[in-house]
Image (cartoon, rainbow, N blue to C red; front, top):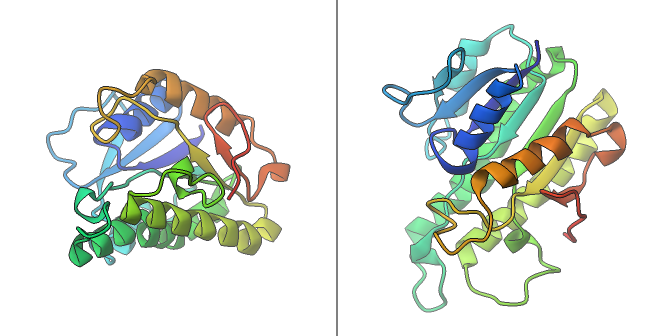
Length: 223
């Protein structure tokens, strides 16, 4: 049975990833800040992970010692409304967004590297955004979120270079503008539709995709 660990699993895209992978028969580990009391499909294993705490990924990894992982999906993220407009930047909120969105995925990947090396697929995926694309920034604003996703993209690219020779495939995916707590009610995409597309793209990954930045339909996005 294939195994996946998904961060930010309590709601939105993360929750939908958990449900759809579970429906496909995967063994799913759902990482979230408060696992107690969060209902999941049968067989899903909740794990505590708080990316605001840099020590949390290493603590979480102890529960998975010796267990193979085929796929790590770094999905947890913050928008940072208080660090989105010039003239109104809250430095503390900026740091928090960078910690969760950029440093967090790297620390989770680092902590779970032994598990991923034991897995067959060796896929490391990150939920990024076109807002992290420097080439597609035509509207400005969203300073902390854009910067954090650009940093995440750079991290994915470096992981692809460092881990690729060992058989890993590291990819950044943009889910599109999705109706979630972060995306809001005006977003054109339902989470089910976006995630179904993301999973379809993920399951079709080959070694040639290592280091790519794609949207939920497989379109290449400029870095």
